[in-house]
Amino acid sequence: MDGRTLPCALGSGGLAVRKREGDGATPIGRFWLKAALFRADRVAPPAGDLPIRATRADDGWSDDPGSALYNLFVRLPQTLSHERLMRTDHLYDVVVITDHNRTPRVRRHGSAVFLHCSREGLTPTAGCVALPRETWRRLGAHLVRNRPIDIDAVARPVRRRRARPFFRRTRSAI
Image 1 (cartoon, rainbow, N blue to C red):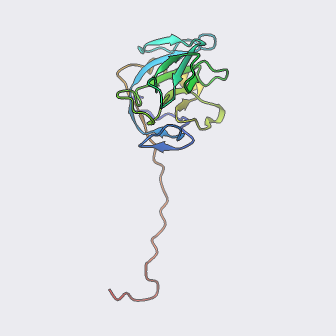
Image 2: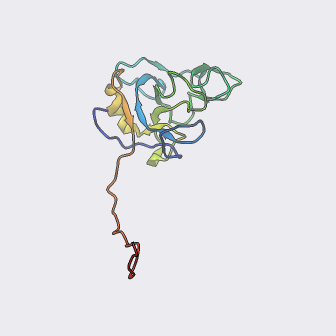
Image 3: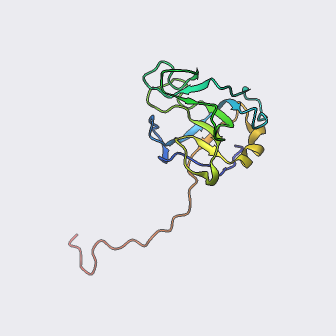
């Protein structure tokens, strides 16, 4: 946000240019923030101008590629495969819905790619971007409609070894 790089947890499947349902990967790309949910019994509502509301017990998100409701908000109970948005742990105390695989929705190209709270130690997610609680406190005012997030790996310097000659102690006939 605003050109800043934030420490976060990404999917256990690494980063993917071509995200697939169930691969555990976080998609690489530029994504727009669409809406936010928060646990009113645990946290204050985040600032910013995104549409926001408190999470309810019957809130869910379809991750069922065989359903017409794939990668959409659903009311629970549902018979289709889904994620419950009101969790007992603290991961979804704040959830920001992104536009990943939303327009158009393509089945099996990944669902429920959210920004949400991380576990201690920034352990991997199932494909979302998870930020520490301290970051959420500072980030709230930056959750605005016309500001995308870029998901990509930050390059670390790589120590290169000297290339070994292809022919060692011999002469090439070329």
